[in-house]
Length: 502
Image 1 (cartoon, rainbow, N blue to C red):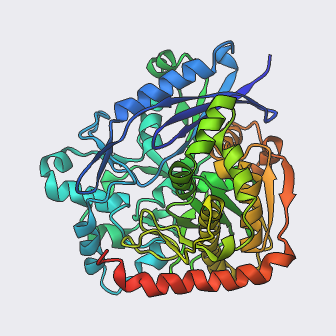
Image 2: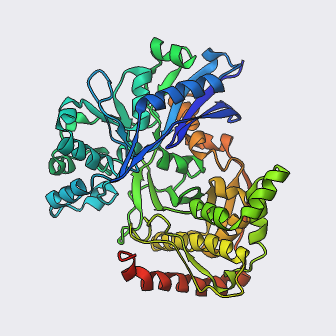
Image 3: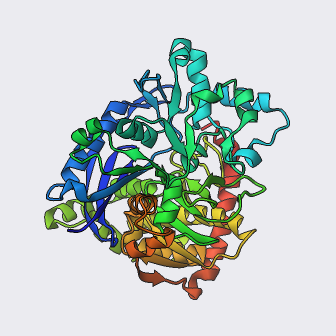
């Protein structure tokens, strides 16, 4: 009988369970969904019981027809920057504040003030922000003191699932580096940060490598999941660092671009990697001893989806009638517009922007509209605007390293026109693997395999991934894009004083 590895990618909208053979073949995957409670004032919360139910449901579905005793290990890729408070018995004390919760601005300001001359960015690899976990825990302390008093541990999403599986309170270095409380070089909870935050260190979980076996499934967990107590639970990592491993970036200075709802350029380095302008941030990697720098923009695929929903009702209707994806028709439409979209410029800041602008007030806009612009020009301008913003992130990396090649992953990577525009605007060779949407799940499977001893090291990623095609930049459009990139940046600078007013 074959042996298997089980991966859970616990995201914002649901848990994706994927079953892989130890040879690296994806057997099947399934998604169990759950909701986010968004409210005014920056509230974004989830019920941890929904996570656990989704993991149980997805596990039972994905292992149908498989002998449970043949599943060697389970591991995780999880959404990061959460604040889940539990008591000493693991009881949830309040809904989890997820990464999108931004209530803790006052606490972020307090932390910055209390740190004084300490360079938080250099220490943590991140800016101080209400989106991080320790600021959220400060908010709980200040606004829900009885909850804070009862809090035994603050956990991340995957950490709560590990607790439900093993009864232990742990996290890994990669997830911990998304809390704003981990000394990135020392790989320990930072005394300076916790003192400034006025948070007790014993409220934070035990630190582990991503590949550490935390334990075997308890009898209760095994019964709920449809597994056996012989399955090992391997710590896993945060979804950001997992995306680097899942893209196949395991060696020094290998870089990748993920084009999904948001988009980011990240990679693998042997040393903590920061830039003087603080354009990107840096995580502890899921690969022990390495780091994962990352520059993330907010609205990449979501800008493309906005353009589809706004301009492409006809393509959506035709695709439904023909039983095909609307993206196939829209990608073909974009191809009919030339490089530069006939002078039309789009700023892709529909939800503010992180890298490289770090401006929550920025908004989207078209500039240079003329009577001759058609739908295809608007849609191409959207894709080019996303690519130009990513190119600004890439410029920050290129101050420190040469980058001529990148792995391209994410849902957007499936479209040839998207890959072509990214390659041309960024002036890099884009290499697409066979599983462009499975990066974080593949990473969790590899971590599970290394943790339980099936694989010797992370080179096992090459069992799971194969590069199927590559796209190279077209030299004939480089002059066009060089000029358009300058206009793109100039437009932002002109609009910058108006964003708050708008």
